[in-house]
Length: 175
Image (cartoon, rainbow, N blue to C red; front, side, top):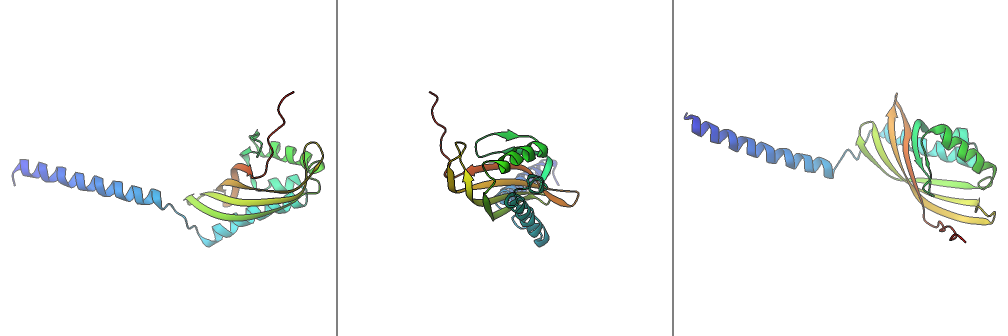
C-alpha cells in the first residue's frame, strides 16, 4: 500500500480512537463507581453510626474513633481542625457544656465511590437538647454533613468533614 494512504488511515484511526476515549471518559465521569461492595457500604454506615453513638453517649473519644488522625474537620461555624485530637478536645468541651444533653440522629442519604478506597458520604443529621452559646435552649437543629471517607489498612475512616446547619443563626453584629 502507498505510504500516503497508510498515513491517512493512521490519522483517521487515531482520530476515532481519541473520540472513543473521550466518550468513555465522559461516561466514567457521569457515572463514577456509585456502587461499592455491600460490605463497604455496611462498613461506611457503621462508621457514621459509631460517630453518632459516641455523640449520644457524650464521649468525644468514642465519637472520634471514626476519624483519621489527619482529618480535616470544618464545623458548621466554619472553624477548621486539622487532626483527630483537636476535634476530640473541642467536642469534649462541647459535651461538658452546650451539648451535654444533646441527642443526635444521623441518616446516610448517599454514598458515592470516587475510587474503590475513597467515598463521599452525604449524611442528614438532626439534634435535640442543645444550648446556644448564651445558654438558652436550642430545641431542634438539623443539617447535612459531607464526609469524605478513605479505606485505610482495611478500615473506613473520615478524612474530611464539612458540616452545614440548616437553622444556624448569624452572629450578633459587633457593637
